[in-house]
Length: 255
Image (cartoon, rainbow, N blue to C red; front, side, top):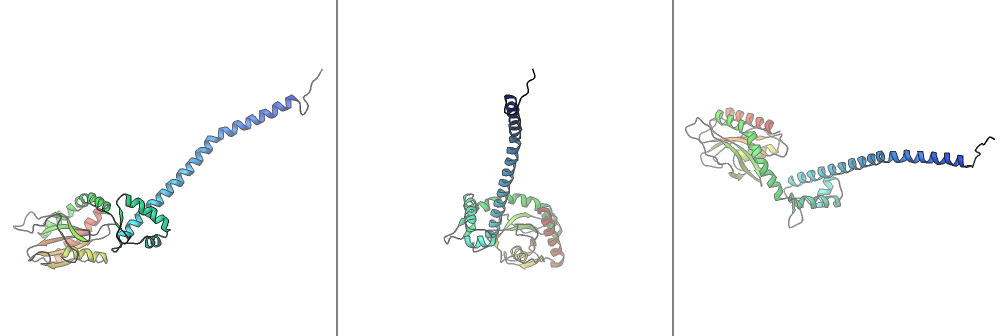
């Protein structure tokens, strides 16, 4: 006697159950891969947001650094092209790290944390400049120096004295002076205007002292000059060319 399973009978139900189980197994097997793809997409999105926030924070620091009178939050938002709320978030984080501060009028200014980082970087700057300074001191027979801007003043970051002269100027590392006086400061001011020509002065920082300096250009975030100082007149043409070559060499070393 033959038996045939008809539609709706037990054999047919078992076949359908098997199909459903196989489909469920395939779906479950694909879930980890789907979760991995979703996780990777979320991680990429978070990384992009972090990079954008970092970029905005650094741009904000540069804007404040370039604004002697400070910036309001509204001014910062307009220049960055973002909302005030986003600026407030950036200011909160940067203030917490000492990179920014609010003055009595609520304007944004650089914080002491920036100076701390700058001082940590100064030994590296001095080290990179020393070969060119040594060469300049020996060529000119005068004390060579690298001067940087700190707190609106010029500061002698590195000083090299010539080895073969009978006498020379003793110029102390860390010496400060106004940018408006002396060849080193005037060269920095000229550099702000994009002028690379050497600057010469006589007796502006010390009676009877002669100075020649040129700005260090092309190094992002650095305002500096290279110069020499002597107790006798310096040939502006010869020494000026030597100073300019040293400034270019140091710019290449620090870039």
